Length: 435
Image (cartoon, rainbow, N blue to C red; front, side):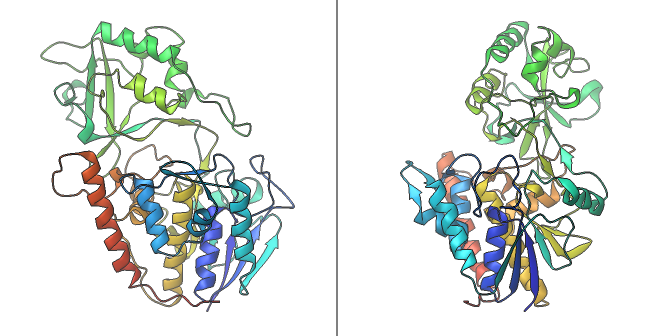
C-alpha cells in the first residue's frame, strides 16, 4: 500500500484520511493547528464546526438527508461520529459541537497507520496526496496552489440564487435573448407597479450578518442587488433589470429579470445580476414577488462571503483529482462544494477513487444518480461563467424520468434510486482493510 499525505484535518480531510487508513494505506495527516489557526477556528481538534452545529435535514425527501444516508452506507467517519453525538433538532441532524470534533479526533489518532504532523504546510506535497485546506486557504500554500492551477484561486463577495426550471410559471416567463438573438435566457417581465413593489420590498429586506472573518467590503463587479438598489429607485431598471431589446407582444416591459442556464441539462437557472446578502427567508419572500418566480424552488440561495476556491470545472475530474495529475486530489469547500456534509462527501469520494487508482484499477463512478456522485460531476462539469460553491440538491441529480403527483414523492423516488445505486457501486469497491 502507498504512503499518502492528506493536508487539512477539517471534515473533508478527516474523512479522506479515515477512508485511506481503513484501506491499508499509511497516511500522514498535516494540520496547521495548534501551531497556527485561521480567524475562523477556535479548537485544536479535527473536523471543527466553525459555524452552525447542524448538519441540516436528515430526511430522505431532502437532498442533504439523502447524502447523509449515502455516506452512512459508505461507512463515513463523519456521519458515524455525528450520529453518536447528535442532539435533539427535529428532522435535522445536529451534534454536540465539542463532543463531535473530539470523537473524530480520537478515532483518527487511534489508527495505527496514521501519522499526525501539526504545523503549517507551505508547499504541495508529493503525489499521492489530497489537499483539503478549506475556503480560507492563505499564505504560501495558497500561492503554490494558484501557481499549480495556472491562475489565482477564485474570490467572490456575493453570489446569485439558483432556481429550478420546472418550478417557474411559464404563463409569465418567456425565453428570449436581447434583440432577437436566440432564446438563451428566460425572462420575467415586470410592469411599473410590479417593479416598484419589488423594489421597496428589496431595500427594506433584512440582510445576513457577516462572520468576523468575512470582509464586509463590497466590490463593484459583484455588488449585492440590495446594495445597488439603494443607490436609487431606477438603478436596477437601468442596470440588470433593463428591458431594452426584449419585447412581450410587441411592447417593451417596464423591467425584466433575466435567468441564465446554470447546468448542462438546463434544469437550473441563476438570477442574472442578483448577487445578494439577504437572509434566505427574505430571498424567498422578496424574489417571489418577481412574476414567474412566485413558487420558485431555490436550489441555492445567494450568499456573500470571503471565499477562495478552485476553478474546478475543467481542472478537476468527477473524483476531485487534477486532470493533469490524477494522484493529486483536492477535497472540501475549496473544490466548490458548500456545507459540512458536502465537504465530507468530497473527501470520501476523493479517497475511494485515489485508492482504486493506486491499485491500478479504474475509480468507481457513482454517477449523477447519486448525491455524492452528482456533486463531483457538478464541480467538474459546470458550464456556466460564474462557477460558485454549491450545496447538494436534487436539481443536480439525473431526472426521475417520470411524473409524480407531488415534489415529496419525486424526491423519495430519487432517494430510493440513489441508495440502490450506491449499494451497487459499493460492491465494486476494493474491500477495506480493518486496522
